Image (cartoon, rainbow, N blue to C red; front, top):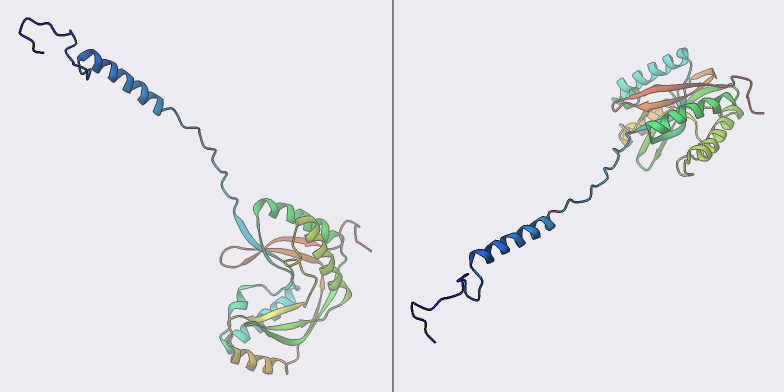
Length: 241
Protein backbone atom coordinates (compact mmCIF):
# COMPACT_ATOMS: atom_id res chain seq x y z
CA UNK A 1 0.00 0.00 0.00
CA UNK A 2 1.25 3.53 -0.79
CA UNK A 3 0.35 6.99 0.50
CA UNK A 4 0.09 10.20 -1.44
CA UNK A 5 0.58 13.66 -0.05
CA UNK A 6 -3.07 13.97 0.94
CA UNK A 7 -2.96 11.01 3.25
CA UNK A 8 -2.84 11.90 7.01
CA UNK A 9 -0.55 9.94 9.33
CA UNK A 10 -1.15 9.70 13.07
CA UNK A 11 -0.34 12.87 14.95
CA UNK A 12 2.58 11.39 16.89
CA UNK A 13 4.27 10.35 13.57
CA UNK A 14 6.51 8.10 15.50
CA UNK A 15 5.62 4.85 13.83
CA UNK A 16 5.31 1.60 15.76
CA UNK A 17 8.64 2.28 17.57
CA UNK A 18 7.04 5.19 19.47
CA UNK A 19 9.80 7.75 18.99
CA UNK A 20 7.54 10.80 19.00
CA UNK A 21 7.86 13.63 21.56
CA UNK A 22 5.08 12.32 23.84
CA UNK A 23 6.63 8.86 23.95
CA UNK A 24 10.11 10.29 24.62
CA UNK A 25 8.73 12.42 27.49
CA UNK A 26 7.08 9.39 29.06
CA UNK A 27 10.26 7.33 28.68
CA UNK A 28 12.32 10.11 30.31
CA UNK A 29 9.85 10.20 33.20
CA UNK A 30 10.09 6.43 33.67
CA UNK A 31 13.90 6.60 33.63
CA UNK A 32 13.77 9.25 36.36
CA UNK A 33 11.57 6.99 38.51
CA UNK A 34 13.93 4.07 38.04
CA UNK A 35 16.89 6.28 38.84
CA UNK A 36 15.27 7.51 42.03
CA UNK A 37 14.51 3.97 43.13
CA UNK A 38 18.15 2.88 42.62
CA UNK A 39 19.47 5.79 44.71
CA UNK A 40 17.66 4.90 47.94
CA UNK A 41 19.90 5.65 50.97
CA UNK A 42 22.08 2.80 52.27
CA UNK A 43 21.70 1.76 55.90
CA UNK A 44 24.27 3.38 58.20
CA UNK A 45 27.04 1.10 59.39
CA UNK A 46 27.81 1.07 63.07
CA UNK A 47 31.32 2.24 63.75
CA UNK A 48 33.47 -0.15 65.71
CA UNK A 49 34.81 1.38 68.92
CA UNK A 50 38.58 1.97 68.79
CA UNK A 51 40.65 -0.82 70.28
CA UNK A 52 41.92 -0.05 73.76
CA UNK A 53 45.69 0.20 73.94
CA UNK A 54 47.41 -2.75 75.58
CA UNK A 55 50.73 -2.63 77.41
CA UNK A 56 53.15 -5.13 78.94
CA UNK A 57 53.45 -5.66 82.71
CA UNK A 58 55.09 -7.95 85.24
CA UNK A 59 54.97 -8.35 89.04
CA UNK A 60 58.13 -8.46 91.12
CA UNK A 61 59.91 -7.91 94.41
CA UNK A 62 62.63 -5.24 94.57
CA UNK A 63 65.61 -5.26 96.94
CA UNK A 64 66.28 -2.40 99.31
CA UNK A 65 68.17 0.61 97.94
CA UNK A 66 71.45 -0.50 99.54
CA UNK A 67 71.30 -4.06 98.15
CA UNK A 68 69.98 -2.84 94.81
CA UNK A 69 72.91 -0.45 94.44
CA UNK A 70 75.40 -3.28 94.97
CA UNK A 71 73.61 -5.50 92.43
CA UNK A 72 73.70 -2.70 89.84
CA UNK A 73 77.46 -2.46 90.44
CA UNK A 74 77.76 -6.22 89.79
CA UNK A 75 75.73 -5.85 86.58
CA UNK A 76 77.94 -3.03 85.35
CA UNK A 77 81.06 -5.04 86.17
CA UNK A 78 79.72 -8.03 84.24
CA UNK A 79 78.72 -5.81 81.28
CA UNK A 80 82.24 -4.39 81.05
CA UNK A 81 83.87 -7.82 81.15
CA UNK A 82 81.48 -9.64 78.78
CA UNK A 83 79.84 -6.88 76.70
CA UNK A 84 76.43 -8.02 77.98
CA UNK A 85 74.35 -4.93 78.76
CA UNK A 86 70.75 -6.01 78.29
CA UNK A 87 70.19 -6.66 82.01
CA UNK A 88 71.20 -3.06 82.80
CA UNK A 89 67.89 -1.89 81.30
CA UNK A 90 65.93 -3.51 84.14
CA UNK A 91 66.03 -2.72 87.86
CA UNK A 92 67.34 -5.55 90.06
CA UNK A 93 64.26 -7.64 90.87
CA UNK A 94 62.82 -11.06 91.71
CA UNK A 95 60.08 -11.95 89.23
CA UNK A 96 56.84 -13.21 90.78
CA UNK A 97 54.73 -13.10 87.59
CA UNK A 98 56.32 -13.16 84.14
CA UNK A 99 55.35 -10.45 81.60
CA UNK A 100 51.77 -10.26 80.33
CA UNK A 101 49.72 -7.79 78.26
CA UNK A 102 46.49 -6.09 79.27
CA UNK A 103 44.45 -2.91 78.80
CA UNK A 104 44.37 0.34 80.77
CA UNK A 105 40.99 -0.66 82.23
CA UNK A 106 42.37 -3.91 83.64
CA UNK A 107 45.50 -2.04 84.74
CA UNK A 108 43.43 0.08 87.14
CA UNK A 109 41.61 -2.98 88.47
CA UNK A 110 44.90 -4.85 88.86
CA UNK A 111 46.49 -2.03 90.85
CA UNK A 112 43.62 -2.07 93.34
CA UNK A 113 43.44 -5.86 93.40
CA UNK A 114 47.17 -6.25 94.05
CA UNK A 115 47.00 -3.61 96.79
CA UNK A 116 44.32 -5.61 98.60
CA UNK A 117 46.15 -8.88 98.01
CA UNK A 118 49.50 -7.56 99.30
CA UNK A 119 47.81 -6.20 102.42
CA UNK A 120 46.86 -9.78 103.31
CA UNK A 121 50.45 -11.11 103.07
CA UNK A 122 53.05 -10.71 105.81
CA UNK A 123 56.52 -9.16 105.23
CA UNK A 124 59.46 -11.61 105.25
CA UNK A 125 63.25 -11.87 104.90
CA UNK A 126 65.14 -12.69 101.69
CA UNK A 127 68.68 -14.06 101.60
CA UNK A 128 70.94 -13.96 98.54
CA UNK A 129 73.76 -16.50 98.31
CA UNK A 130 76.19 -16.91 95.41
CA UNK A 131 75.58 -17.20 91.66
CA UNK A 132 74.02 -19.66 89.27
CA UNK A 133 73.01 -19.98 85.64
CA UNK A 134 70.68 -21.72 83.24
CA UNK A 135 70.99 -22.57 79.55
CA UNK A 136 67.67 -23.88 78.20
CA UNK A 137 66.36 -23.65 74.62
CA UNK A 138 68.83 -20.86 73.79
CA UNK A 139 67.78 -19.00 76.95
CA UNK A 140 70.96 -18.01 78.77
CA UNK A 141 70.67 -16.40 82.21
CA UNK A 142 73.38 -15.75 84.79
CA UNK A 143 71.85 -14.84 88.15
CA UNK A 144 72.22 -14.30 91.88
CA UNK A 145 70.71 -17.17 93.87
CA UNK A 146 67.67 -16.35 96.02
CA UNK A 147 67.28 -18.80 98.89
CA UNK A 148 63.72 -20.13 98.99
CA UNK A 149 61.90 -19.84 102.29
CA UNK A 150 58.33 -20.08 103.51
CA UNK A 151 57.68 -16.36 103.07
CA UNK A 152 58.51 -16.06 99.36
CA UNK A 153 57.09 -19.50 98.50
CA UNK A 154 53.75 -18.73 100.11
CA UNK A 155 53.57 -15.25 98.56
CA UNK A 156 54.11 -16.71 95.09
CA UNK A 157 51.63 -19.57 95.49
CA UNK A 158 48.92 -17.28 96.86
CA UNK A 159 49.52 -14.74 94.11
CA UNK A 160 49.20 -17.37 91.36
CA UNK A 161 45.83 -18.43 92.78
CA UNK A 162 44.76 -14.78 93.08
CA UNK A 163 45.63 -13.95 89.45
CA UNK A 164 43.90 -17.06 88.10
CA UNK A 165 40.73 -16.54 90.13
CA UNK A 166 40.33 -12.76 89.89
CA UNK A 167 41.89 -11.89 86.54
CA UNK A 168 41.51 -15.05 84.49
CA UNK A 169 45.22 -15.84 84.12
CA UNK A 170 45.68 -19.25 82.51
CA UNK A 171 47.74 -22.01 84.18
CA UNK A 172 50.29 -21.54 81.39
CA UNK A 173 50.71 -17.86 82.29
CA UNK A 174 50.41 -17.92 86.09
CA UNK A 175 52.48 -20.99 86.97
CA UNK A 176 53.11 -22.60 90.33
CA UNK A 177 56.66 -23.59 89.33
CA UNK A 178 59.05 -21.03 90.81
CA UNK A 179 62.82 -20.52 90.74
CA UNK A 180 63.44 -17.12 92.39
CA UNK A 181 66.59 -15.30 91.27
CA UNK A 182 68.00 -11.86 90.36
CA UNK A 183 69.42 -11.74 86.83
CA UNK A 184 72.91 -10.38 86.20
CA UNK A 185 72.90 -11.09 82.46
CA UNK A 186 70.59 -12.69 79.93
CA UNK A 187 70.07 -13.20 76.16
CA UNK A 188 72.99 -11.14 74.80
CA UNK A 189 75.61 -13.80 75.52
CA UNK A 190 77.00 -16.42 73.18
CA UNK A 191 77.06 -19.99 74.47
CA UNK A 192 80.85 -19.82 74.87
CA UNK A 193 80.63 -16.53 76.79
CA UNK A 194 77.92 -17.96 79.00
CA UNK A 195 79.97 -21.08 79.79
CA UNK A 196 83.02 -18.94 80.61
CA UNK A 197 81.04 -16.55 82.80
CA UNK A 198 79.27 -19.35 84.68
CA UNK A 199 82.59 -21.08 85.39
CA UNK A 200 83.98 -17.79 86.74
CA UNK A 201 81.00 -16.67 88.81
CA UNK A 202 80.24 -20.07 90.32
CA UNK A 203 83.55 -19.64 92.19
CA UNK A 204 82.69 -16.16 93.45
CA UNK A 205 81.09 -15.49 96.82
CA UNK A 206 78.26 -13.08 97.36
CA UNK A 207 75.83 -12.77 100.26
CA UNK A 208 73.20 -10.23 101.14
CA UNK A 209 69.81 -10.06 102.82
CA UNK A 210 66.91 -7.68 103.01
CA UNK A 211 63.35 -7.52 104.30
CA UNK A 212 60.55 -7.62 101.75
CA UNK A 213 57.89 -5.03 102.61
CA UNK A 214 56.29 -4.42 99.19
CA UNK A 215 55.49 -6.07 95.91
CA UNK A 216 55.53 -4.04 92.69
CA UNK A 217 53.68 -3.85 89.38
CA UNK A 218 56.01 -2.75 86.58
CA UNK A 219 55.00 -1.51 83.11
CA UNK A 220 56.98 -1.32 79.87
CA UNK A 221 57.23 2.17 78.35
CA UNK A 222 58.29 0.97 74.92
CA UNK A 223 61.99 1.33 75.72
CA UNK A 224 62.37 0.33 79.39
CA UNK A 225 60.52 -0.84 82.50
CA UNK A 226 59.06 1.56 85.06
CA UNK A 227 57.58 0.97 88.51
CA UNK A 228 53.86 1.62 88.07
CA UNK A 229 52.45 0.69 91.48
CA UNK A 230 53.79 -0.23 94.93
CA UNK A 231 51.74 -2.58 97.11
CA UNK A 232 52.73 -2.69 100.81
CA UNK A 233 52.65 -6.09 102.51
CA UNK A 234 50.70 -6.69 105.70
CA UNK A 235 48.93 -3.36 106.18
CA UNK A 236 45.55 -2.78 107.79
CA UNK A 237 45.60 -5.89 109.97
CA UNK A 238 44.39 -8.21 107.15
CA UNK A 239 47.32 -10.64 107.12
CA UNK A 240 46.39 -14.22 106.24
CA UNK A 241 47.31 -16.92 108.74
